[in-house]
Amino acid sequence: MQALYQKLKGKGFEVVAVDMMEDKATVAKFVKTSGYTFPVLLDSKGEVGGGPYAARAIPTNYVVDKGGRLVGRKIGIDGPAWTSDERVALFESLLSQ
Image 1 (cartoon, rainbow, N blue to C red):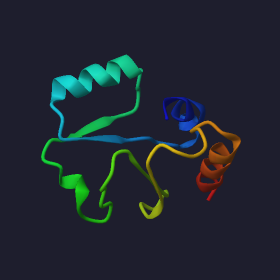
Image 2: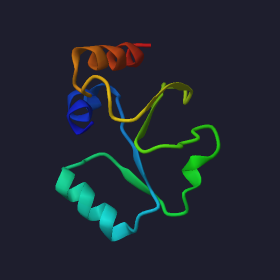
Image 3: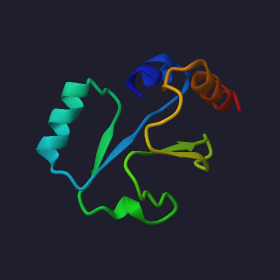
């Protein structure tokens, strides 16, 4: 995710991660170790599991377009790498709309 963010951030691409139910120190250490430079928010009460996003498994990834509409969701870690030609093309297509 970090590599995709680095590749596309100058084109209006944003990444926001939400950590569910872990303490601030644990998350800060993970973010630093992982080298993430995008925002990582804390959901200490697990509230992200409801509402329009309804995260029921970790990880769950959402694609939100420029208008704030949910246009895709991927549950789990299987599938193409974040920097695969397929994923980069998808995000570049969404950015051009």
